Amino acid sequence: MATTVILGSGIIGLSTAYYLSQHQPGSSIHLVDASPELFASASGYAGGFLARDWFPPAAADLGALSYDEHRKLAEREGGREKWGYTRSVTVSYEPRGPRADGKRGEDWLLEGTSRVGIVKDRGKKDGEAPGWLRRVDGDALSVVDDGEGTALVDPLKLCRFLLQRCKAAGVQVHHPATALSIGTDVRGELANVCIGYTDSSAETEFPATRLLLSAGVWTPQVFASLFKGATAAIPVGRLGGHSLVVRTPGGAGDVCHSVYCRLDALSSEMYSRPSGVIYLAGVNSAALPLPAPATGAAPVEESLEELKRVARRLIVSEGELEVVRAGLCFRPTTDRGTPYIARLTDEQLGGGVKTREGERGGVFVAAGHGPWGITLCLGTGMAMAEMMCGKQTSVDVSGLGL
Image (tube, rainbow, N blue to C red; front, side, top):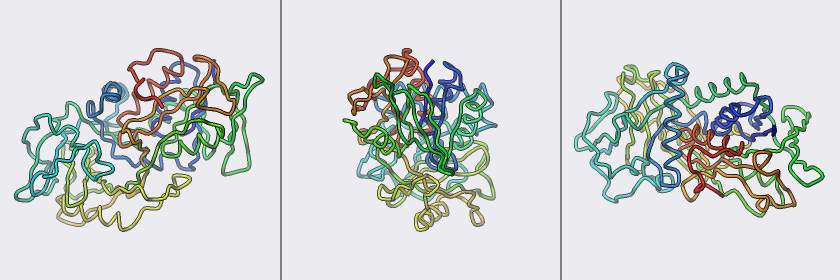
């Protein structure tokens, strides 16, 4: 049985460990994370929006699989109570009327448009706004999804649930720790991984023939440090994003909503959760420096103030909004708009490093999910676990190779 080391224990690494533990003993799986606090970036600070069919063709089947897995997991494990899983009515709201420039959602990260634009051509129907949304005369509001194809989760609570399940299965978690080097056997094949604990001087070497790189925005750095002779690079970039979680005196209402709003130069996302709070994001920048580790991210006060201004403008409240949580996280982005989910070839690893054939070994990557990491996590974890074990994947991910 191949021992597997997973570098990065955010939502993608966790999901892979969760499904992989259904194929092999959990004790043969090691999760390694450099951060002293787990889920301190996108996995813990994301909005938690789930969509079934908002994806380009290469990721469409993965999106459907993952959405269905979210629903099944929630039904089986009490997801509404444990991590706030709920169907969501998704609304597009444009104060002072729809945009005239016709920009679509595929480029929302870089051009400031909303990802709800991806589904603009589906014949949206008029509908009522959520009670907490402050409206103005002359605005435009339409219902994109009535809750059949979109949902919400609390990402931090989902991560904690998956971590608990992984630990119960025997998966070994190491943090704060970083991979220092890989070792090969007499045939030049990957045989072990050495990690160092950053809160001490201790080092540990694991026998490992399978390695997964799933460290989000840090994945390119991890790959380059371990495979110095690599002939390939992992082209994953970063986009810093600020967020607020607020509580209003009147609560968020019984029905949960996802609201995408274009206000001035900002494309805001708002999600009302069953716990009675509203998540707000939309202030993004690719220029923010990447911290190491994730806990080093320092929110920019001006960006938080901009979000507070938007919250006061868009959320009905008789008094000052209570800020429950504020944060800065970094989404792992790709130029093509879809993640990399693949096994790397020995040629790509370079430096004479080889891997054992089939399910006995391999170096894999699962990164670059952009704003869709929470949505695609379970499908990615399932497909990656199957790929590692030499099984046919539940959906075709051949279009997501490196």
